[in-house]
Image (cartoon, rainbow over all chains, first blue to last red; front, side):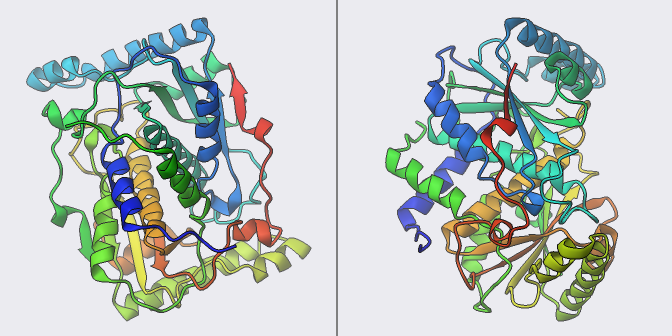
Length: 212
Length: 212
């Protein structure tokens, strides 16, 4: 079997996919076709994983009671975070929309199974965090795949992981990597929301590439 | 500006990109066009980052002396890791090719700047590891972009991070996320090398998706 050769046209579209990926916080309530959601999960599992350990565990959060509890956790954590800023930045923080937990039709908590024997520890002796990293790659894969289907994803990290684990009643060996809101975006932007709202601009090239 | 609408054909090719991404360990020595390498780094920087913090720092490792030192670090760490397995699995481990540090024309160490003020801490109060995660997303973006250009990437994690930092003389506030070999693959496979060599097979669906 020969590998595919990708064309300039594919690469142009792939760049557009990356550029329009965005972290989405404003969703329409329109539900997601279960077949598309299934495809997203299937694509996410094509992500690289250390030692082929496949440590990703996806929890689809459907029960209204659990969703309400997660929202409460977010509100508490967000208020605590806002309180750490002073003056103008606290005011700016208060104006940002940092979750989409009310409207997003799909909520997905993604965990790493820290106790998995899959992969037999390969590649993890000196950098054990690569197990966690594998799950991040799966999250990012799902994010890009969602965008290819016109869907948006918002990664909510203003949550206390232990609280999320309690609400979702997952095995104690799992660790929370990401809580995702998935749905059709209410509005579309090419620039990051945090750039547009003057929270943080793009860094210059010479700050991020170094030669040795 | 309207977001692009992606076609079924694009989605089919994107799935192929994910499926053929592979972790490559066997490289041809053919150099990479600097313009392509520049494009990969530019695409990597379209990755999501917590609070738009853009904490990725890319170190292009060119000096032969530094490359030789990194190879030495790998050999030591790999031997120590092999010694933790017993019998048949140690023998199998010994047969795996776990780095491509001799032939890969491009070597890239990717760090997280843990001390960056960019992003003003947003999204990191309860899950500070999201700074590291942002760099993982950049690594994964670069990996997929490389594949779109016919290039392969191998993520070498059998390295002691402090040793790598010493060899590359980077600021003490940076932490190593990934050491990457990049180049044209010597051979192409659709199945992961660790599946093909009976190290770890693919997990069943019901182990990774849960409903709550």
